[in-house]
Image (tube, rainbow, N blue to C red; front, side):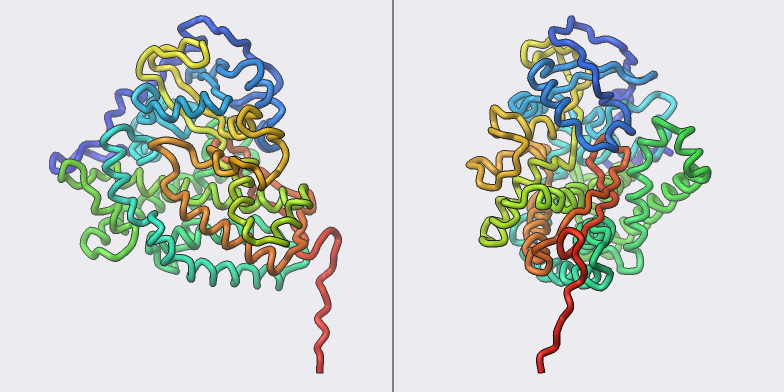
Amino acid sequence: MNQPQNPDHYPSISDDILVDSGAVDPVYQEIYQRLKGFDLGSTNAWTRGQPFDYYKRMREESPVMWTRGRKPTSGFWSVSRYDDVKHVELNPDIFSSQRGSMHMAVLPPSGKADRLMYAAHNSLINLDADIHRDLRIQQSEFFFPKYVETLKERVGAKIDDLLDNLERQGPEVDFAKLFSTELPMFTLCEMLGVDEEDRPNIIKWMHYLELAPQFLTHPFRMFMAEPMFLFRFNQMLEDMFNYGERVMADRIKNPRQDLLTVIANATLDNKPLSQNYLDGSWLLIIFAGNDTTRNSLSGTIRLLTEFQDQRQMVIDDKSLIERMSHEALRMTSPVMHMRRTATQDTEIAGQKIAEDEKVIMWYGAANRDPSVFPNPDVFDMTRDNVEKHVAFGHGVHRCLGNRIAQMQLNMAYERILDRFPNIYWTGKQKIEPIILVHAISSLKVNLYGKGAKRPVKVAVS
């Protein structure tokens, strides 16, 4: 439930602004048509991957398109062109994150006491202006290049351990489960200072949080698939928040040299943060602390299988790995969208948008805008503007952990291609029914090439 306010602590964001209007249609006349062919609000529609053909139609025919919401939530505007996405990102005074940035829906009045939803709206990603800036600055030392360097040895050793495990279980393995999930979670726990025995819980909590949107939109379907889901989910929430509250309290009394200590001891106007903020920080860490890295790792293996010329190019010249990593982020776009809310009447690409209407930025569409990336559906690490993608967002809310993610990706790709240069996606994968991230939960690969068997090592006497 919503935590009571302590007058000695910095007050939480008021939930008065989080009520949805429930408007079916926009205030102003639409100048672009509503396209058919894909339901942006349906979680199951995303299990087939991102709708790049539909994105193309959006950019060309309806760059600012209205979609009706599901009752009781209002509809939203979709922005799909690169320049329009950047415009929204670069004007946080007009397009607010503080009314929720990660979900299309707005917290309904009946949900205001829910600790999960309230924590979500008091996390760094959902804050604006001075509050966002001040908290981000306090955490930033753990994302500077100097700190990133201190992680490299530990991350490299973990990559080697994971690759050893792949080799033991090969030739065919689930790369997403055995590598992509494990590496970023290890790095996150190292940064946070999570004790070794507690780390398996992080993965479990992350799994249930990712399934939450599916339960909210299709509760009967989820109940039929897993009758105990609601009970387990509620138990998970209690365990997760209790653990976070306990460990944050410990870091206040017994500070360490880790990110959790910085978060727990953060202040605003020289006041400690309320429990709602701490809940929000803990929730954001669990839910969003590894999505980009995890899904980009799996997505890149798919791309290397589909674009063999690029694989050979980077094998021949390892200096191209960083360029390959950026191009894979553009192509994969692991975080598929973020939301903003208009704080005043405004306009995008000629379309009038009213105050309080929601605006969704589709990063996967922007990252394949041909006006910025010629031949956008081609994986080409030699592009002149390979780093221009918006996979990490843009502006004041650009992903704080982008250097950490890039470091992990670069190190992983180099060592994977050294050990398994012919690693090959078999075509089997599972994409979770999640709208926020392109969540690849399973990706079957053959470590040695298409249909290959484990190489026989011949001992030389």
